[in-house]
Length: 489
Image 1 (cartoon, helix red, strand yellow):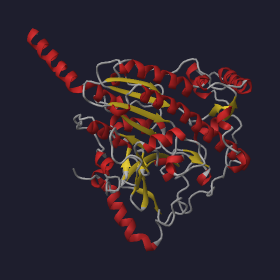
Image 2 (image 1 turned 60 degrees about the vertical axis):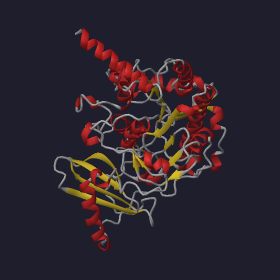
Image 3 (image 1 turned 90 degrees about the vertical axis):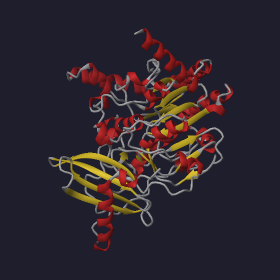
Image 4 (image 1 turned 45 degrees about the horizontal axis):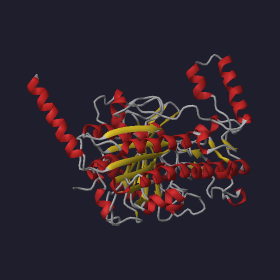
Protein backbone atom coordinates (compact mmCIF):
# COMPACT_ATOMS: atom_id res chain seq x y z
CA UNK A 1 0.00 0.00 0.00
CA UNK A 2 2.86 2.38 0.86
CA UNK A 3 4.47 1.58 -2.51
CA UNK A 4 1.21 2.22 -4.36
CA UNK A 5 0.78 5.47 -2.48
CA UNK A 6 4.25 6.64 -3.50
CA UNK A 7 3.58 5.73 -7.13
CA UNK A 8 0.29 7.61 -7.09
CA UNK A 9 1.94 10.68 -5.56
CA UNK A 10 4.65 10.57 -8.24
CA UNK A 11 2.08 10.32 -11.01
CA UNK A 12 0.13 13.26 -9.61
CA UNK A 13 3.32 15.30 -9.33
CA UNK A 14 4.28 14.51 -12.92
CA UNK A 15 0.75 15.45 -14.03
CA UNK A 16 0.95 18.76 -12.17
CA UNK A 17 4.36 19.58 -13.67
CA UNK A 18 3.13 18.70 -17.15
CA UNK A 19 -0.03 20.77 -16.74
CA UNK A 20 1.81 23.85 -15.50
CA UNK A 21 2.80 24.88 -19.04
CA UNK A 22 -0.60 24.28 -20.61
CA UNK A 23 -2.93 27.09 -21.64
CA UNK A 24 -5.95 28.09 -19.60
CA UNK A 25 -9.44 27.71 -21.05
CA UNK A 26 -12.28 30.22 -20.71
CA UNK A 27 -15.37 28.32 -21.81
CA UNK A 28 -18.36 30.62 -22.40
CA UNK A 29 -21.88 29.41 -23.10
CA UNK A 30 -24.66 31.76 -24.20
CA UNK A 31 -28.31 30.72 -24.09
CA UNK A 32 -30.55 30.99 -27.20
CA UNK A 33 -28.12 33.24 -29.08
CA UNK A 34 -28.46 32.87 -32.81
CA UNK A 35 -25.63 33.94 -35.13
CA UNK A 36 -27.12 37.38 -35.57
CA UNK A 37 -24.73 40.04 -34.32
CA UNK A 38 -21.91 42.19 -35.65
CA UNK A 39 -19.33 39.44 -36.10
CA UNK A 40 -21.81 37.67 -38.41
CA UNK A 41 -22.35 40.80 -40.48
CA UNK A 42 -25.53 41.93 -38.70
CA UNK A 43 -24.39 45.41 -37.77
CA UNK A 44 -27.83 46.52 -36.58
CA UNK A 45 -27.18 44.46 -33.42
CA UNK A 46 -25.12 46.35 -30.83
CA UNK A 47 -22.56 43.70 -29.86
CA UNK A 48 -19.16 45.43 -29.52
CA UNK A 49 -17.68 42.84 -27.15
CA UNK A 50 -18.74 39.81 -29.15
CA UNK A 51 -17.28 41.53 -32.19
CA UNK A 52 -13.98 42.30 -30.43
CA UNK A 53 -13.74 38.70 -29.32
CA UNK A 54 -14.36 37.53 -32.88
CA UNK A 55 -11.59 39.83 -34.10
CA UNK A 56 -9.19 37.98 -31.80
CA UNK A 57 -10.07 34.57 -33.20
CA UNK A 58 -12.04 32.59 -35.79
CA UNK A 59 -15.76 33.05 -36.40
CA UNK A 60 -17.43 29.85 -37.60
CA UNK A 61 -20.26 30.65 -40.00
CA UNK A 62 -21.49 27.07 -40.19
CA UNK A 63 -21.35 25.52 -36.73
CA UNK A 64 -24.23 23.18 -35.88
CA UNK A 65 -25.73 21.86 -32.67
CA UNK A 66 -26.85 18.23 -32.51
CA UNK A 67 -30.33 18.98 -31.18
CA UNK A 68 -31.89 22.43 -31.01
CA UNK A 69 -32.96 22.62 -27.40
CA UNK A 70 -30.96 23.43 -24.25
CA UNK A 71 -30.23 20.20 -22.38
CA UNK A 72 -29.62 17.86 -25.34
CA UNK A 73 -27.35 20.41 -27.04
CA UNK A 74 -25.35 21.20 -23.91
CA UNK A 75 -25.03 17.51 -23.15
CA UNK A 76 -23.50 16.93 -26.59
CA UNK A 77 -20.96 19.71 -26.06
CA UNK A 78 -19.99 18.59 -22.58
CA UNK A 79 -19.83 14.84 -23.23
CA UNK A 80 -18.64 14.87 -26.84
CA UNK A 81 -21.43 12.40 -27.65
CA UNK A 82 -24.50 12.66 -29.86
CA UNK A 83 -28.15 12.41 -28.70
CA UNK A 84 -28.60 8.78 -29.70
CA UNK A 85 -25.70 7.93 -27.38
CA UNK A 86 -26.57 10.24 -24.46
CA UNK A 87 -30.31 9.44 -24.77
CA UNK A 88 -30.94 13.05 -23.78
CA UNK A 89 -33.73 14.26 -26.07
CA UNK A 90 -35.62 16.36 -23.50
CA UNK A 91 -35.22 18.54 -20.40
CA UNK A 92 -35.91 15.72 -17.95
CA UNK A 93 -33.07 13.22 -18.49
CA UNK A 94 -29.52 13.23 -17.12
CA UNK A 95 -26.88 11.81 -19.44
CA UNK A 96 -25.36 9.64 -16.69
CA UNK A 97 -28.47 7.48 -16.81
CA UNK A 98 -27.42 6.15 -20.24
CA UNK A 99 -23.64 6.69 -20.05
CA UNK A 100 -22.83 6.64 -16.31
CA UNK A 101 -19.05 6.43 -16.68
CA UNK A 102 -18.53 8.98 -19.43
CA UNK A 103 -15.72 11.47 -18.83
CA UNK A 104 -17.08 14.93 -19.56
CA UNK A 105 -15.11 17.77 -21.14
CA UNK A 106 -14.43 19.61 -17.85
CA UNK A 107 -13.84 16.30 -16.06
CA UNK A 108 -11.19 15.37 -18.64
CA UNK A 109 -9.37 18.63 -17.98
CA UNK A 110 -9.64 18.03 -14.23
CA UNK A 111 -8.10 14.59 -14.64
CA UNK A 112 -5.23 16.16 -16.54
CA UNK A 113 -4.10 18.60 -13.89
CA UNK A 114 -6.43 21.54 -14.48
CA UNK A 115 -8.37 23.38 -11.81
CA UNK A 116 -11.89 23.25 -13.21
CA UNK A 117 -14.67 25.56 -12.09
CA UNK A 118 -18.14 26.19 -13.49
CA UNK A 119 -20.74 28.88 -12.92
CA UNK A 120 -24.00 29.92 -14.52
CA UNK A 121 -25.92 27.90 -17.09
CA UNK A 122 -23.58 25.21 -18.43
CA UNK A 123 -25.47 21.99 -17.90
CA UNK A 124 -29.24 22.45 -17.98
CA UNK A 125 -30.63 23.68 -14.61
CA UNK A 126 -31.25 20.78 -12.26
CA UNK A 127 -28.83 18.51 -14.11
CA UNK A 128 -25.42 19.56 -12.87
CA UNK A 129 -22.66 16.96 -12.89
CA UNK A 130 -20.55 16.88 -9.73
CA UNK A 131 -17.64 14.82 -11.18
CA UNK A 132 -17.06 17.58 -13.75
CA UNK A 133 -15.75 20.16 -11.30
CA UNK A 134 -12.80 20.67 -8.96
CA UNK A 135 -15.07 22.78 -6.74
CA UNK A 136 -18.88 22.76 -6.64
CA UNK A 137 -20.65 24.49 -9.51
CA UNK A 138 -22.34 27.74 -8.51
CA UNK A 139 -24.70 30.41 -9.83
CA UNK A 140 -25.93 33.87 -8.83
CA UNK A 141 -28.48 33.97 -6.04
CA UNK A 142 -30.89 36.68 -5.00
CA UNK A 143 -31.11 38.28 -8.45
CA UNK A 144 -34.27 39.66 -10.03
CA UNK A 145 -36.40 37.64 -12.38
CA UNK A 146 -38.24 40.84 -13.24
CA UNK A 147 -37.35 44.39 -12.27
CA UNK A 148 -40.76 46.08 -12.37
CA UNK A 149 -43.52 45.77 -9.78
CA UNK A 150 -46.05 45.15 -12.55
CA UNK A 151 -44.21 42.10 -13.83
CA UNK A 152 -43.58 40.81 -10.32
CA UNK A 153 -47.30 41.12 -9.53
CA UNK A 154 -48.19 39.06 -12.61
CA UNK A 155 -45.78 36.32 -11.55
CA UNK A 156 -47.22 36.31 -8.03
CA UNK A 157 -50.78 36.01 -9.35
CA UNK A 158 -49.79 33.08 -11.58
CA UNK A 159 -47.99 31.44 -8.67
CA UNK A 160 -51.03 31.72 -6.39
CA UNK A 161 -53.30 30.23 -9.06
CA UNK A 162 -50.96 27.30 -9.60
CA UNK A 163 -50.82 26.62 -5.87
CA UNK A 164 -54.62 26.79 -5.69
CA UNK A 165 -54.77 24.27 -8.54
CA UNK A 166 -52.68 21.83 -6.46
CA UNK A 167 -49.37 22.10 -8.26
CA UNK A 168 -46.25 21.00 -6.38
CA UNK A 169 -43.69 23.64 -5.28
CA UNK A 170 -41.34 22.44 -8.05
CA UNK A 171 -44.10 22.74 -10.64
CA UNK A 172 -45.00 26.20 -9.38
CA UNK A 173 -41.38 27.34 -9.72
CA UNK A 174 -41.18 25.98 -13.26
CA UNK A 175 -44.56 27.25 -14.45
CA UNK A 176 -44.89 30.65 -12.75
CA UNK A 177 -43.84 32.85 -15.64
CA UNK A 178 -44.55 36.50 -16.20
CA UNK A 179 -44.29 38.73 -19.28
CA UNK A 180 -42.12 37.67 -22.21
CA UNK A 181 -40.14 40.92 -22.07
CA UNK A 182 -39.35 43.79 -19.75
CA UNK A 183 -37.44 47.07 -19.78
CA UNK A 184 -36.60 48.09 -16.20
CA UNK A 185 -34.46 50.94 -14.93
CA UNK A 186 -32.15 48.76 -12.83
CA UNK A 187 -28.42 48.16 -12.56
CA UNK A 188 -26.80 45.46 -14.66
CA UNK A 189 -26.08 43.19 -11.71
CA UNK A 190 -29.70 43.28 -10.55
CA UNK A 191 -30.28 40.57 -13.17
CA UNK A 192 -28.58 37.19 -13.49
CA UNK A 193 -25.96 37.88 -16.17
CA UNK A 194 -24.62 41.00 -14.47
CA UNK A 195 -24.26 39.13 -11.19
CA UNK A 196 -22.64 36.23 -13.06
CA UNK A 197 -20.07 38.59 -14.59
CA UNK A 198 -19.21 39.78 -11.07
CA UNK A 199 -18.68 36.16 -10.01
CA UNK A 200 -16.52 35.39 -13.05
CA UNK A 201 -14.35 38.47 -12.47
CA UNK A 202 -13.77 37.56 -8.83
CA UNK A 203 -13.01 33.97 -9.82
CA UNK A 204 -10.48 34.97 -12.47
CA UNK A 205 -8.59 36.98 -9.85
CA UNK A 206 -8.47 33.92 -7.60
CA UNK A 207 -7.51 31.55 -10.40
CA UNK A 208 -4.57 33.70 -11.40
CA UNK A 209 -2.98 32.95 -8.02
CA UNK A 210 -3.19 29.17 -8.46
CA UNK A 211 -0.14 27.20 -9.53
CA UNK A 212 -2.03 25.17 -12.11
CA UNK A 213 -3.83 25.98 -15.34
CA UNK A 214 -7.56 26.56 -15.11
CA UNK A 215 -10.67 25.67 -17.07
CA UNK A 216 -13.40 28.18 -16.22
CA UNK A 217 -16.92 27.66 -17.54
CA UNK A 218 -19.23 30.69 -17.54
CA UNK A 219 -22.83 30.29 -18.71
CA UNK A 220 -24.80 33.45 -19.55
CA UNK A 221 -28.59 33.06 -19.77
CA UNK A 222 -29.56 35.94 -22.04
CA UNK A 223 -31.02 36.29 -24.62
CA UNK A 224 -33.16 33.38 -23.34
CA UNK A 225 -36.77 34.22 -22.51
CA UNK A 226 -37.97 36.32 -20.84
CA UNK A 227 -36.26 39.15 -22.68
CA UNK A 228 -35.49 41.23 -19.61
CA UNK A 229 -32.69 43.77 -19.74
CA UNK A 230 -31.96 47.14 -18.13
CA UNK A 231 -33.66 50.02 -19.92
CA UNK A 232 -30.40 51.44 -21.31
CA UNK A 233 -30.03 48.40 -23.56
CA UNK A 234 -33.55 48.78 -24.91
CA UNK A 235 -32.73 52.41 -25.63
CA UNK A 236 -29.99 51.31 -28.03
CA UNK A 237 -32.64 50.33 -30.58
CA UNK A 238 -35.30 52.26 -32.47
CA UNK A 239 -38.30 49.91 -32.66
CA UNK A 240 -39.45 51.56 -35.87
CA UNK A 241 -36.27 50.28 -37.56
CA UNK A 242 -36.65 46.67 -36.41
CA UNK A 243 -37.60 44.55 -39.41
CA UNK A 244 -39.96 41.62 -39.06
CA UNK A 245 -39.32 38.18 -40.52
CA UNK A 246 -39.41 38.12 -44.31
CA UNK A 247 -40.83 34.58 -44.44
CA UNK A 248 -43.66 34.43 -41.86
CA UNK A 249 -45.03 31.19 -43.28
CA UNK A 250 -44.35 27.48 -42.88
CA UNK A 251 -42.02 25.75 -45.35
CA UNK A 252 -44.08 24.80 -48.40
CA UNK A 253 -44.58 21.09 -49.06
CA UNK A 254 -43.05 20.18 -45.68
CA UNK A 255 -44.81 17.94 -43.13
CA UNK A 256 -46.86 19.99 -40.68
CA UNK A 257 -44.81 18.69 -37.74
CA UNK A 258 -41.48 19.89 -39.19
CA UNK A 259 -41.88 23.26 -37.44
CA UNK A 260 -43.95 23.94 -34.33
CA UNK A 261 -45.31 27.41 -33.74
CA UNK A 262 -44.48 28.82 -30.32
CA UNK A 263 -42.39 26.59 -28.09
CA UNK A 264 -41.90 27.93 -24.59
CA UNK A 265 -42.95 31.43 -25.67
CA UNK A 266 -46.58 30.32 -25.30
CA UNK A 267 -46.14 29.93 -21.54
CA UNK A 268 -45.49 33.64 -21.02
CA UNK A 269 -48.14 36.16 -20.00
CA UNK A 270 -49.93 37.93 -22.86
CA UNK A 271 -48.70 35.65 -25.66
CA UNK A 272 -51.54 34.42 -27.90
CA UNK A 273 -51.68 31.00 -29.49
CA UNK A 274 -51.10 30.94 -33.21
CA UNK A 275 -49.73 33.81 -35.28
CA UNK A 276 -48.02 36.62 -33.36
CA UNK A 277 -49.37 40.06 -34.44
CA UNK A 278 -46.82 42.42 -35.98
CA UNK A 279 -46.78 44.93 -33.11
CA UNK A 280 -46.11 42.19 -30.56
CA UNK A 281 -43.54 40.54 -32.84
CA UNK A 282 -41.65 43.83 -33.04
CA UNK A 283 -41.68 44.18 -29.25
CA UNK A 284 -40.37 40.64 -28.88
CA UNK A 285 -37.56 41.26 -31.36
CA UNK A 286 -36.73 44.52 -29.59
CA UNK A 287 -36.47 42.59 -26.32
CA UNK A 288 -34.30 39.89 -27.90
CA UNK A 289 -31.90 42.49 -29.28
CA UNK A 290 -31.76 44.35 -25.96
CA UNK A 291 -31.02 41.09 -24.14
CA UNK A 292 -28.14 40.38 -26.55
CA UNK A 293 -26.64 43.81 -25.90
CA UNK A 294 -27.04 43.35 -22.15
CA UNK A 295 -25.29 39.97 -22.23
CA UNK A 296 -22.64 41.41 -24.53
CA UNK A 297 -21.78 44.11 -21.97
CA UNK A 298 -21.31 41.48 -19.26
CA UNK A 299 -19.14 39.38 -21.56
CA UNK A 300 -17.00 42.44 -22.17
CA UNK A 301 -16.44 42.95 -18.46
CA UNK A 302 -15.19 39.36 -18.09
CA UNK A 303 -12.86 39.53 -21.10
CA UNK A 304 -11.52 42.92 -19.98
CA UNK A 305 -10.66 41.45 -16.57
CA UNK A 306 -8.91 38.48 -18.19
CA UNK A 307 -6.76 40.96 -20.12
CA UNK A 308 -6.08 43.19 -17.10
CA UNK A 309 -4.86 40.16 -15.16
CA UNK A 310 -2.26 39.40 -17.85
CA UNK A 311 -3.94 36.10 -18.79
CA UNK A 312 -4.70 36.97 -22.41
CA UNK A 313 -1.56 35.39 -23.87
CA UNK A 314 -2.09 32.03 -22.22
CA UNK A 315 -5.85 31.54 -22.36
CA UNK A 316 -7.92 29.83 -25.05
CA UNK A 317 -11.41 31.32 -25.28
CA UNK A 318 -14.34 29.51 -26.82
CA UNK A 319 -17.82 31.06 -26.97
CA UNK A 320 -20.80 29.10 -28.20
CA UNK A 321 -24.56 29.58 -28.29
CA UNK A 322 -26.34 26.33 -27.47
CA UNK A 323 -28.55 26.51 -30.60
CA UNK A 324 -30.21 28.99 -32.91
CA UNK A 325 -33.62 30.64 -32.55
CA UNK A 326 -36.55 31.69 -34.70
CA UNK A 327 -37.92 35.23 -34.49
CA UNK A 328 -41.10 34.83 -36.51
CA UNK A 329 -39.54 33.04 -39.47
CA UNK A 330 -41.71 30.17 -40.68
CA UNK A 331 -44.48 31.78 -38.58
CA UNK A 332 -42.76 30.31 -35.52
CA UNK A 333 -40.67 31.30 -32.50
CA UNK A 334 -38.02 29.66 -30.31
CA UNK A 335 -36.10 26.55 -31.39
CA UNK A 336 -37.30 22.91 -31.28
CA UNK A 337 -36.80 21.97 -34.94
CA UNK A 338 -34.25 20.90 -37.54
CA UNK A 339 -34.37 24.06 -39.65
CA UNK A 340 -31.19 26.03 -40.34
CA UNK A 341 -32.26 28.86 -38.04
CA UNK A 342 -32.44 26.46 -35.08
CA UNK A 343 -29.47 24.18 -35.72
CA UNK A 344 -26.94 26.81 -36.86
CA UNK A 345 -25.45 28.53 -33.82
CA UNK A 346 -22.60 30.95 -33.08
CA UNK A 347 -19.12 29.64 -32.38
CA UNK A 348 -16.07 31.83 -31.75
CA UNK A 349 -12.63 30.39 -30.95
CA UNK A 350 -9.60 32.35 -29.78
CA UNK A 351 -6.18 30.73 -29.45
CA UNK A 352 -3.22 32.83 -28.23
CA UNK A 353 -0.77 33.59 -31.01
CA UNK A 354 -3.05 32.37 -33.80
CA UNK A 355 -2.08 33.84 -37.19
CA UNK A 356 -5.64 33.67 -38.52
CA UNK A 357 -7.21 36.04 -35.98
CA UNK A 358 -10.15 37.95 -37.41
CA UNK A 359 -10.90 35.36 -40.09
CA UNK A 360 -14.23 33.67 -40.74
CA UNK A 361 -14.61 30.06 -41.76
CA UNK A 362 -17.33 28.33 -43.81
CA UNK A 363 -16.10 24.90 -42.71
CA UNK A 364 -18.87 22.63 -41.46
CA UNK A 365 -18.24 21.96 -37.78
CA UNK A 366 -20.39 20.44 -35.04
CA UNK A 367 -20.76 21.10 -31.35
CA UNK A 368 -19.54 17.59 -30.52
CA UNK A 369 -16.24 18.75 -32.04
CA UNK A 370 -15.64 21.35 -29.32
CA UNK A 371 -14.51 18.73 -26.75
CA UNK A 372 -11.81 17.11 -28.95
CA UNK A 373 -10.68 20.49 -30.27
CA UNK A 374 -10.04 21.95 -26.81
CA UNK A 375 -8.30 18.77 -25.68
CA UNK A 376 -6.18 18.81 -28.83
CA UNK A 377 -5.19 22.47 -28.41
CA UNK A 378 -4.17 21.82 -24.79
CA UNK A 379 -2.14 18.71 -25.58
CA UNK A 380 -4.51 16.29 -23.84
CA UNK A 381 -5.26 12.79 -25.03
CA UNK A 382 -8.61 12.20 -26.72
CA UNK A 383 -10.99 9.81 -24.90
CA UNK A 384 -12.22 6.94 -27.05
CA UNK A 385 -15.91 7.72 -26.49
CA UNK A 386 -15.84 10.97 -28.48
CA UNK A 387 -18.18 11.23 -31.47
CA UNK A 388 -16.69 14.42 -32.88
CA UNK A 389 -13.33 15.40 -34.32
CA UNK A 390 -10.90 18.20 -33.53
CA UNK A 391 -11.18 21.13 -35.91
CA UNK A 392 -7.78 22.49 -34.83
CA UNK A 393 -6.55 22.28 -38.46
CA UNK A 394 -9.31 24.72 -39.49
CA UNK A 395 -7.98 27.25 -37.00
CA UNK A 396 -4.74 27.29 -38.98
CA UNK A 397 -6.44 27.26 -42.36
CA UNK A 398 -10.02 28.60 -42.16
CA UNK A 399 -10.61 28.09 -45.90
CA UNK A 400 -9.74 24.40 -45.99
CA UNK A 401 -12.26 21.74 -46.99
CA UNK A 402 -13.46 19.97 -43.88
CA UNK A 403 -16.46 17.84 -42.99
CA UNK A 404 -18.77 16.65 -45.73
CA UNK A 405 -21.82 17.23 -43.53
CA UNK A 406 -23.08 18.23 -40.08
CA UNK A 407 -25.84 16.27 -38.32
CA UNK A 408 -28.73 17.30 -36.10
CA UNK A 409 -31.90 15.59 -34.97
CA UNK A 410 -35.19 16.24 -33.22
CA UNK A 411 -37.87 13.87 -31.86
CA UNK A 412 -41.53 14.36 -32.71
CA UNK A 413 -44.83 12.77 -31.88
CA UNK A 414 -47.62 12.93 -34.44
CA UNK A 415 -50.90 11.04 -34.41
CA UNK A 416 -49.50 8.41 -32.10
CA UNK A 417 -46.34 7.98 -34.15
CA UNK A 418 -42.99 8.32 -32.36
CA UNK A 419 -40.61 9.86 -34.83
CA UNK A 420 -37.06 11.11 -35.06
CA UNK A 421 -36.12 13.71 -37.60
CA UNK A 422 -32.51 13.12 -38.71
CA UNK A 423 -31.20 16.20 -40.46
CA UNK A 424 -28.00 16.57 -42.48
CA UNK A 425 -26.45 19.86 -43.62
CA UNK A 426 -24.07 19.53 -46.52
CA UNK A 427 -22.27 22.33 -48.32
CA UNK A 428 -25.34 23.02 -50.47
CA UNK A 429 -28.31 21.18 -49.00
CA UNK A 430 -30.31 20.48 -45.87
CA UNK A 431 -31.78 16.99 -45.99
CA UNK A 432 -34.08 15.62 -43.27
CA UNK A 433 -35.55 12.13 -42.88
CA UNK A 434 -38.51 11.72 -40.55
CA UNK A 435 -38.37 8.07 -39.46
CA UNK A 436 -39.99 5.71 -36.99
CA UNK A 437 -38.01 6.17 -33.77
CA UNK A 438 -38.06 2.42 -33.07
CA UNK A 439 -37.62 1.35 -36.69
CA UNK A 440 -35.43 3.93 -38.50
CA UNK A 441 -35.81 2.08 -41.78
CA UNK A 442 -39.42 3.21 -41.92
CA UNK A 443 -39.55 6.73 -43.41
CA UNK A 444 -42.59 8.93 -42.88
CA UNK A 445 -41.42 12.05 -44.72
CA UNK A 446 -38.38 13.66 -46.33
CA UNK A 447 -37.34 17.30 -46.61
CA UNK A 448 -34.81 18.78 -49.03
CA UNK A 449 -33.77 22.43 -49.24
CA UNK A 450 -31.23 23.83 -51.70
CA UNK A 451 -29.30 26.60 -49.98
CA UNK A 452 -28.04 28.02 -53.27
CA UNK A 453 -31.55 28.89 -54.40
CA UNK A 454 -33.46 28.80 -51.09
CA UNK A 455 -31.23 29.75 -48.13
CA UNK A 456 -34.27 30.53 -45.96
CA UNK A 457 -35.57 26.95 -46.46
CA UNK A 458 -38.98 28.11 -47.64
CA UNK A 459 -39.78 25.28 -50.05
CA UNK A 460 -39.26 21.55 -49.60
CA UNK A 461 -38.27 20.12 -52.99
CA UNK A 462 -37.79 16.49 -51.93
CA UNK A 463 -40.84 15.34 -53.88
CA UNK A 464 -39.85 17.04 -57.12
CA UNK A 465 -39.19 14.22 -59.64
CA UNK A 466 -36.18 16.18 -60.92
CA UNK A 467 -34.53 15.64 -57.52
CA UNK A 468 -35.10 11.88 -57.27
CA UNK A 469 -31.45 10.96 -57.86
CA UNK A 470 -30.27 13.62 -55.42
CA UNK A 471 -32.71 12.40 -52.75
CA UNK A 472 -31.41 8.84 -53.22
CA UNK A 473 -27.80 10.03 -52.91
CA UNK A 474 -28.47 12.14 -49.82
CA UNK A 475 -30.49 9.34 -48.22
CA UNK A 476 -27.52 6.99 -48.55
CA UNK A 477 -25.18 9.65 -47.14
CA UNK A 478 -27.56 10.39 -44.27
CA UNK A 479 -27.87 6.73 -43.32
CA UNK A 480 -24.06 6.43 -43.17
CA UNK A 481 -24.20 9.22 -40.61
CA UNK A 482 -21.48 11.30 -39.06
CA UNK A 483 -18.79 8.64 -39.36
CA UNK A 484 -19.10 8.80 -43.14
CA UNK A 485 -18.68 12.58 -43.17
CA UNK A 486 -15.74 12.93 -40.80
CA UNK A 487 -12.37 14.06 -42.19
CA UNK A 488 -9.61 11.52 -41.83
CA UNK A 489 -6.60 12.44 -39.64
